[in-house]
Image (cartoon, rainbow, N blue to C red):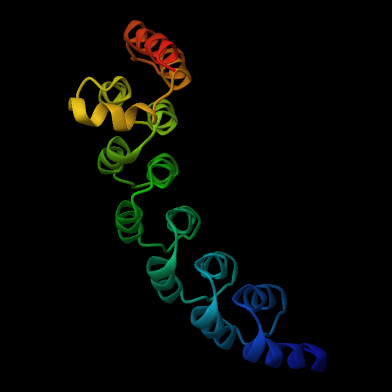
Length: 200
């Protein structure tokens, strides 16, 4: 590092953002990676921790992952599991399930090797909207198409839940599910789609 870079690093360590510190560690050979990482862990967003773990050789993946687990979104946990080779898939999946967003569960099941598809699908069945159910059935190998379709058509829901969930499933969702998902009961889904369109 030249003198100008040393001065910039000192400034970053006292006043820089987590992302500034990550970029400096990534881009400047000879930078004090450990000190910059400590700053990222102290003040950085989970996204900066993910990028540091992914892009900076010698990064303490476990420490950065701990910060992602503490402060990250389901998306942060998903990309960490997908892109960082030393990631603890089970711990990150547990956090995605705890956060409970259907989209995060869908992406995790779809893209992370070693993900527990059935457990993630259960969460999608609880929290997913029509689009999420359709995407899971269409794109996740091992998805239980019949269970996802049953949730889409609401046959297994109690009557009092139906009104609450009706707004979460559209006629378009049912139509897409019927057309694009192998093994789906197209007649049932298309009938549900027509019913939804008439009731809107």
